[in-house]
Image 1 (cartoon, one colour):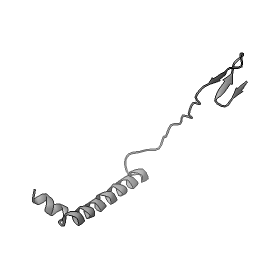
Image 2: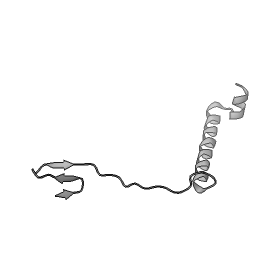
Image 3: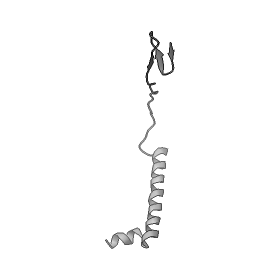
Image 4: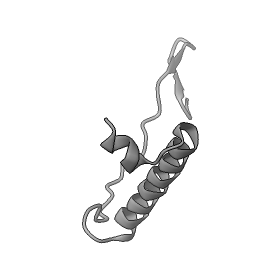
Length: 70
């Protein structure tokens, strides 16, 4: 008797095994000027801008001013 994820042997014992995942190949282009790269660049720019605003709010001086006084 075979079911999903286990097999019953002749002696009535269960033989439990793992299910294999479905394998697929992603053929889409992940470099160059495409929507994936543009979304990633936009999200990273938003993170950088938000962190620059937070830095200025916490220290009282801008990033460029802080870098020139190092």
